[in-house]
Length: 266
Ligand SMILES: [Zn+2]
Image 1 (cartoon, rainbow, N blue to C red):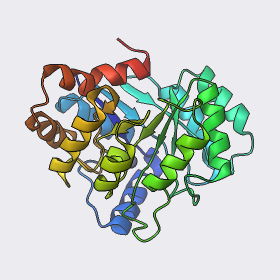
Image 2 (cartoon, protein in one colour):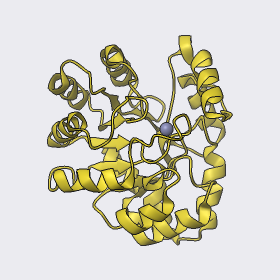
Image 3 (tube, helix red, strand yellow):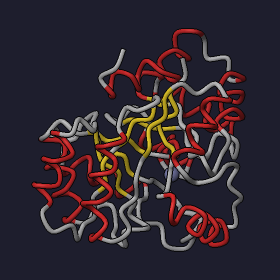
Image 4 (cartoon, protein in one colour):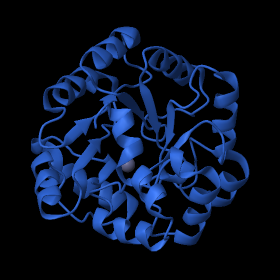
């Protein structure tokens, strides 16, 4: 079994425009269309059995719709959803209650697209409230190719947050992009072995050797296989991860066992 823990879909009406805008802004080419049906078609053809969609709320007013749709679609055809929230979301406790009661397993934060630094008190409040409800928190970590010069979630900020919320978000925080896009050396030095999860999204093919070292040092118990589809091809990422020859036990954990535990699935 393979679970891809970090994918994106966009509403049918705006998928084409959004994908075109984001690919131009980041100088990247998507490998499939941006809709939910395109994700499902990709899964049918390939080897991914389950995908986790991480919605990014870029304006507070989208919060309710995104969570309503995520809750309605959650679990269909192997596609699971996290909830979305924004620092300007009006009713943060109510939104998190809705996400939790809908059976979504966590929330996605994107400091760059939400215009806030990861250690901002408004984010700390959201993370604290989410963790108290048993929700996981996925954050974009490291550089974002659309905002290369202003990193909103550095390894230093992550350390600070872990320190401030010690005992509250331990093992509830999932750092995308192997702990920090473009910061593998800092991740090796500062974040490995901390009580956080890391996903493999978007970076496995950029610096595979460093990713392998991070996995070995951090440990397979806290790594989640992820692609960032449609921005990367999960099949290529599966091949890269297998090429690390981490052993059957570690591969099982990374490809599906860890993810299924978080998703409350067998
Ligand atoms: Zn992503």
